[in-house]
Amino acid sequence: MDTRTVTAPAVGRVGQFLSGIGLLFRGFAVYARQPRLVLLGLVPALITGALFVAAFATLVVFVDDLAALVTPFADGWSAGARGTVRVIAGLAFLGLGGLIGVLTFVAVTLVVGDPFYEAISERVEDRFGGVPNAVDVPFWRSLRRSAADSIRLVAKSVLIGVPLFVAGFIPVFGQFVVPVIGALVGGWFLALELVGAPFYRRGLRLPDRRRALRAVRPTAVGFGAAVFVVFLIPLGAVLFMPAAVSGAALLARRSLGDPIEEA
Image 1 (cartoon, helix red, strand yellow):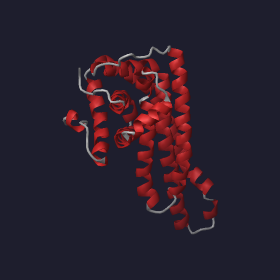
Image 2 (cartoon, helix red, strand yellow):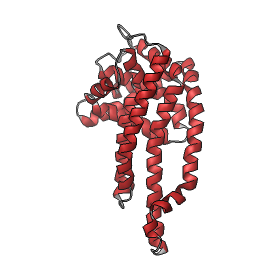
Image 3 (cartoon, helix red, strand yellow):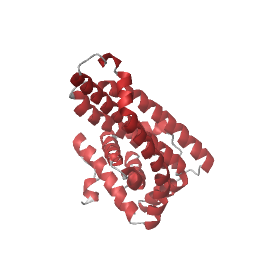
Image 4 (tube, helix red, strand yellow):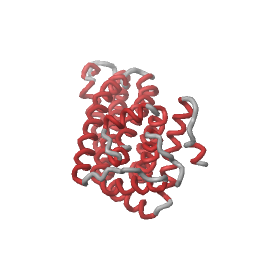
């Protein structure tokens, strides 16, 4: 795949969405060409990835009990009807768990691996012309800002995830439409999380990220949705986290009008 073609400025929302997907592939290509970045990026993702895999596995083990807990009204139904509604409830729990789990994984991994991912993001930007007048933010201040902004984003995603969880009980719509909406919503929040380092480097905060990404929303959602789907694949979150950070640096540059062709 020619990632330069895929990530070229696109006309139309669909084209911009596909362009955003292409940024993840391009981020992977840039990251994979630098072996040191590979090692830097995998360490924190492996640490947090193991914890979140264990947490999701626990959810899978207890999902039947949770489904029964939220559907007491079905206790007196026939076995077939009761089983159907509880399967739907279980899928809704897994969907909500996947949405919150991916967003929380990214937030925690970015905090745990802040020095690693800051280095990856900075090296990617250097390849494309760097950041004129970059702001030197002390490590601990950057870490506090990153943690605070991530908590805000995860909290907001939970508030949005609850209505999606409820909608998951609607037959057909809940099993086919809600997952797509969840991936798009999750993609938007992932994009906001992942571009944190490039924006901090410019002295910009979370409100600035929102404004900049809104201007290229289809591209941002396309990028974030691609990351979201890849992270649902077993080991995908660990292997693609550094690529997502690299692609996010390119997304940030595009949203701010900086070049994404190598200098």
